[in-house]
Length: 508
Image (cartoon, rainbow, N blue to C red; front, side, top):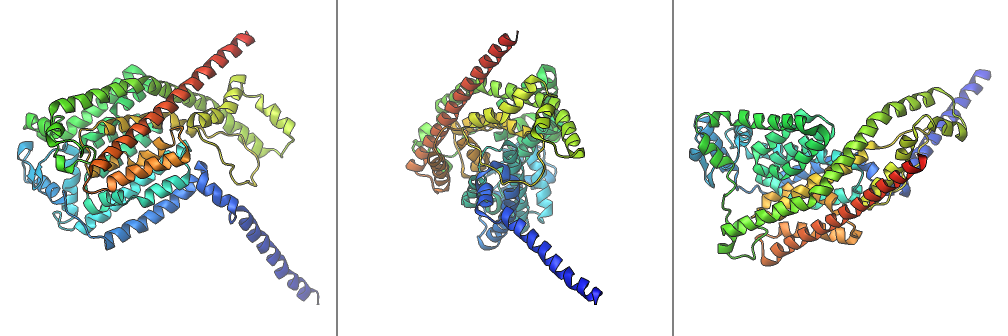
């Protein structure tokens, strides 16, 4: 009778273990606290990002299948590339239904590839799915930057991604070249933050080769090069960007250089008033007036000069934090390895281990998260309790905040001072808007109102006097908020320096 009795006990043991596992999962994940963590805590963005990408995949497929495609520039792109593929390298002769070719050489190569893939441009549905892939890849790159910086709550990114009809339209219903340029730009930003400089410079130059608006990021990139690499290595990276442009433009530069430079890098091109999103309230004569264009250029340069010092300070701080990361990470890894090997000890032993760091390193570890949080004007949300043993560590990638804001700010200044914005230009800065809004000292309601107004302005077609004026108003409010936050951060930075100097004097 013993064996049956023993067998009868086994199911009971299994039920107990199963119940414990289920209870553990329910307690840890299926509760209000974890749900709040996913919505509010930037550290949860890698998890939320996967669901966002899956949802966007479904949304893009539904849009492609259910919403009629609208022809605007795709046929013209194909006609321009067809001329090149037939042997024409004179830019003045490359034309489509909407006018002459006005984009650099990388655009020609990319859309020539699409010309062949889509059966000479006739398979528009296939092109739409390709652009859906571009959308998802770019969104993944954007989410990676946001996840590194841990600045913006996940729910903000979820709402902005799902609710923008205009952005989905630009990608999968219009097939503009702007998304291709912006995709390459975000790839370059990710590479720069991974300190893969030459590859990042190559991607950045490719992005410029698709559309010139990427040059709006160039002033910030120049300072970023100088802060991280110094003068000589900055010249080398600029040379990489220049060589890429020369290689891309070689077929045109070697045959008709003047026509290529005049056609693809025409800074004086006049835009049509009927398509403007931001200057509908101006008369056509004033809109096309050269003095008006020069004044906008002057304002652009003045704003860049005004922001140059805080941007440089941000980049210098970013470099210093990265150097401290390089110093501390091996020590932290070693400490965690030792902690994993030995049994758990009392708190006094942990304090003893911390003494292995220098006093400066200990001070940094305590102040790092707090100072970045104070600079960003945000509050941390407690993460769900973990059952893992306590480990040494710090999320060094939060210093990414010091690098991203200058890039996004520089681009926003360029967009705000643009001579004309067309509807497809929304992608130039759409994905940076939540970051910029959360880089202001404004309340949650004001931040959401800014994002909502900008979305309204870009979805008003045709643009009106009110929508154009409202767009300028939101740009000014956003720039003013970021500027105010920069001033506050500079004050915190100066106060921290003074405090550090005083501590050093006391030690001496």
